[in-house]
Image (spheres, rainbow, N blue to C red):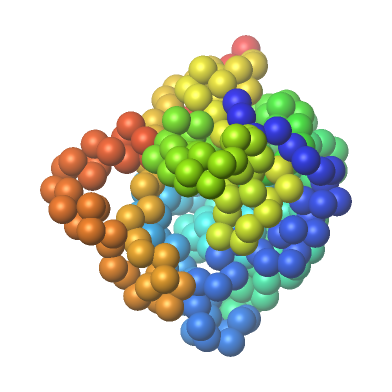
Length: 275
């Protein structure tokens, strides 16, 4: 695990309230159907591994908890698939956009503003699935979030969790750029440059062993890596998709090999023991 926290949960909440994740995925007016349609299209185009990892259709009629819904892209997908969904987020701004988004599509879910580190407002042994994609590595004490998730998951229930990969192309690139600028405070660099909005107050990244240590009391079914961002940023922010030349030169199977070794997203499937 690397990327020690620099602030408390109020700082984390303020950071995401100022700019919710993926807020700029569409140039359309925020809150319109056109906006939400484009956000979803862009999200799953840039991160195409998400639908298969979440396996939305599998959870129809099942009790699902999403820890950290952001502006609700996966929330809508779970609700559309027919899950009995509860979604939690620390950011009231993000949660408001998710509420608006569900209304735009005529979908329902139980939305709660709350802290992933306790989930004290939720019952024990209740959910069939807890899904959390790119969230608990941004809370000051991820191990508390993991314990809270275990408490609310029913015996035999499943956790699908994404945390950042310590040994990833992105971390290596951040560290290389920092060292070229004379920076040696690598944990701080990783934290500050982990997101599109500079200056994240808390970001952790995990090795496979670190991810397993994060989840005591779970049976880890699988861990794999995915997602190397290949796009030229100056074009990407203008909603154009042009790959950096070295990624253009890579055959698709080599790029897939790179993602499996050095992907930024560490995708974990784990279960709470039935006994």
